[in-house]
Every structure is written in structure tokens, then in C-alpha cells.
Image 1 (cartoon, rainbow, N blue to C red):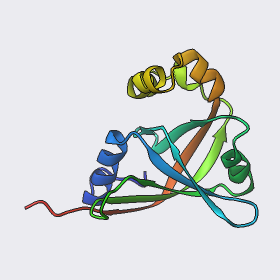
Image 2 (tube, rainbow, N blue to C red):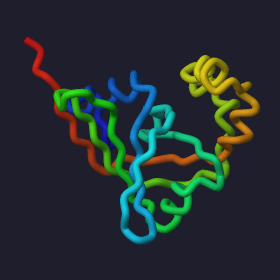
Image 3 (cartoon, rainbow, N blue to C red):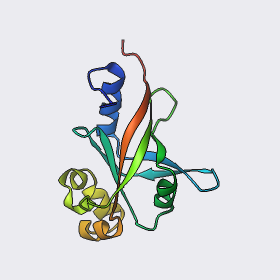
Image 4 (tube, rainbow, N blue to C red):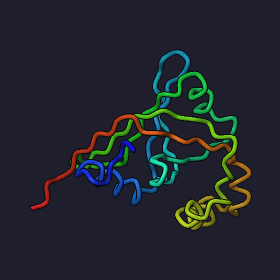
Length: 146
């Protein structure tokens, strides 16, 4: 597993992946232009992978099919707590939809209902395509606690 919770950098990255609600996913368009998109996700610590969902017609899926190398980063306001991840994306046609994954629903149910004004089942029908990313490189920088 690339994100090793036994190392300080891996433990920090795993902690951020458990706590964050949005990652910025960057894929590359056919012409070479990077395209960054905010995404909801869950950190599958037991698999060492990041699972997210997309509308099946989304350009990010076209980009991933053409080039599965992606990068992601957690939000950071002033550059003092950086977690950047490079990885390989896989379009997973066998995954359950997000409304059938308890950890995903636990994390996002309120946002699905309150912000999107949707029911989880409707969200699952719309965001039905799973994308699983296996990290290949992780960079973490955070303040040293005194």
C-alpha cells in the first residue's frame, strides 16, 4: 500500500483523506490541457484506493479512458498543509452505486439531501459510474507541531 499509515507522511495523508469532503481531481484532455474538478470521494484504506463517482457522460471519464494517469489534491488555504497524490484511475463497472455504499452515504447523505435537494437513490442513478484511483505517489507537507 503506497499510503503507509506507519510513516509520518502516510499517516498525515490518510488522516486528511478520512477527514476531507472534497478532492480536486485533475485529468488531461485529448489536446493535453489539464482539467481539474472537485469530487466527492471515500478513502478505501483497506484497499489503498480512492473511490469516487461520476455522471457516465462526464468529460473526466473520456479523459481517464484516454489517459488513466491522474493527480488529486486536498484543499489548502495557505500552502501549509499540502497533500498531493498522483495515481492511476480505473473505471469500475462492477462497483455498487454510491447510494448502496454505507460509508459514502454516511459521509454525503446530508449534502445530497440538503444541498442538491435530491434523494440518495436519485443521486446514485445520476452518479452511477465508479472511478477507483490507486495512488502511485504521495507528497505531504504540514506544519510541525510543537
